[in-house]
Image 1 (cartoon, rainbow, N blue to C red):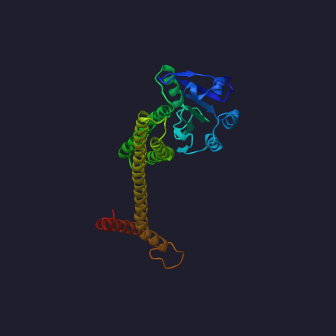
Image 2 (image 1 turned 45 degrees about the vertical axis):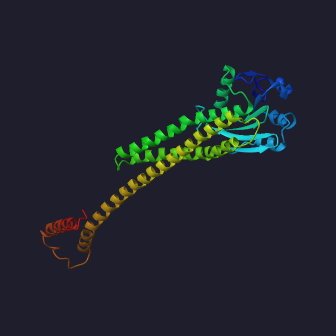
Image 3 (image 1 turned 60 degrees about the vertical axis):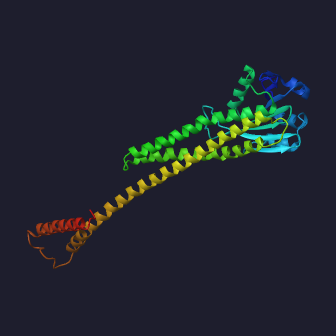
Length: 330
């Protein structure tokens, strides 16, 4: 297999958990009597679609589904097999987990063909199992095992989201309601958290439905063991979906509390400004009235008139403050 080959990897299963690596020439010469085969293809390679249409024997509608770039998890049955589209979290160091990687899987009695555009760590997990002799023993078991590996990779990401929500809840209790910078930090982290939860649920919820539908198909390659593993995976994906719903609901509560704190701070600010304006309004009226440039202003020629006016204004302020306290406005 050359470095620029469309083949990522290929294994022939021995039915005992061991997978024997094969190259592209073996794939092309494979026949069903040689045992179950798994072929993983790179969709970015130009020859992938060519082989799928001319050398795989798949229906053109199936090939279209195997090559589509953007797709949601789903499960479709055809006369000779099933097309399953799944998603896995993107755990590469430079990527966001919510940027989920899609993989399309065709499975029939003797063959599994998967296509993908990007690296998926669950593929490496499955390859390690096949190499160590602890891998799947049939085509259906391979799909069930792979869906379980995808779910295993999701678990820590969802748990981390829950811990982040708990940290924000604790932070909202501890921070000062008047801390503007703290509130901005909470708003930024909360926005990121809600965006991640929404993006993950967008694909994980349909994946639960797709796997549940697959577990109910009456196919030869779905035995009781495979069906049980699929149902277990469906249950785990359901719990993950519920945890994402919990993250969204708790985030909404934090958003409400954050909004309340901001509103309270604005109300206090407006209240203080209103009180100050109310106190200053009569003072401004009196000083404006005495400052008009016309004749007849009382005390204009009296030396102590200025101090008398200042004393009167102070008395007026004291009277206003006393009145405000009496009405519990201060």
